[in-house]
Image 1 (cartoon, helix red, strand yellow):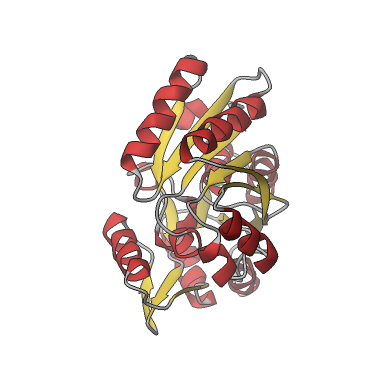
Image 2 (cartoon, one colour):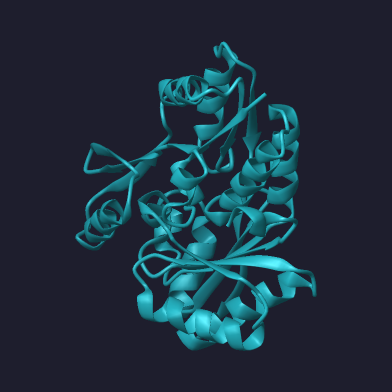
Length: 285
């Protein structure tokens, strides 16, 4: 019995990985000046960055349940008899609810997982589901394996400003005002599906150092996979990778790119580090 794996576009998996492992991606939407666009690729993220910098109104929207219905039908037609859907945190988006609505109407068994995460926090859960499905797991067991992976993943990220997160309601206005008034560089994390501040430092270089320290502490001496991601910060992300390789030369690094949906809420310049237990995931890299 084959189990299909479906996720949304905010998993930000490495380029080509989803296609290679038959993962169906449902796009979340970015809305720029009232015009909706599916989150697709780096060109779309570049468009969002340009829109933010020009002062355009940029928001995001969950997929309609029909998009998940179409994805379920796609995996069914490909020979899967059941499916697991993994979405970004329900505390950040209505995507999980849309997936549940589609699953309730499906003519094959479908399990829906609220990852309580985003980016490669969701991406690592997808990898775990794919690994489980490849070993013959049914949808229920693949969902359980993915949930376990998501819960054991830690994500820290750096943003140039809290203003975009404040606009989107992803962080409190008081925190955003304090960060702006003090001109500090914020470091945040995903905790139980929500964005929360971790630290504030005075300079970009100190922020990057602190971000790496938090990521290394998350490894806790265990074999882990590490994802280092950015949006429109090529020099900054290369500096992070270089420093990480010096500090943890045996730690495999997955390089991925943050897309327009998350970029709409963080602004350009964001750097994210996601750390997860290896737990056999290298088999599907």
